[in-house]
Length: 223
Image (cartoon, rainbow, N blue to C red; front, side, top):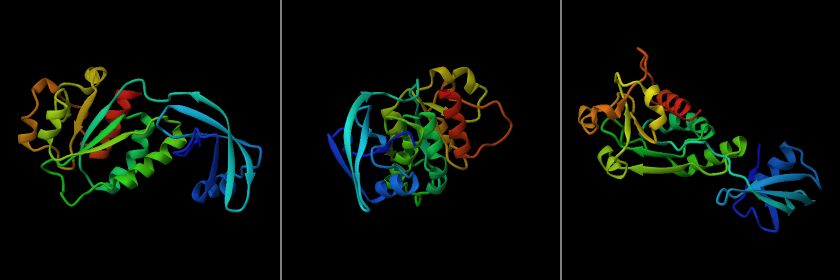
């Protein structure tokens, strides 16, 4: 763990209870006078605290130093991801967060199952845990779009990942926003929303699952 998230990080004194207390003192075996680092994920500051008191249910931390330390990817990548089974989203979300994806907008594309509804509170908890482990200093943004047309109205320069002779690798440096389909791919009406030069593909004869494709895009565009 690179730091502990606490929305009040930066305050001169903090009290830790509940899950944070159990994790630090039962799992990590922290002791009085140890130093730990906290972030609130709002101001890019890393706050160093001393553990000044511990009892069975709570611990008191005293602020020693606050430093601006921004940890994020060197590029910005916004993924428009056609909605798939939330269980599959949850499996790869920590990896996408660690690679530095800035934002994911979930889109109800024509082949998305409308019964699938991402649980944003659950996803944000996954992102918090991933950020604490990876050191990321800003939370990934999560949004929803009703359909691909409305997404493109807000993001007109978006690229599409689909079957194409336009190789993704050669165009990866210019990608800021890219749309990735769900299982079954894009409907022909959705493909028609993009000019041919805005559609990119991987140089492989293999068919990737949606979650495999999004990880491949993030790794090649950001790492």
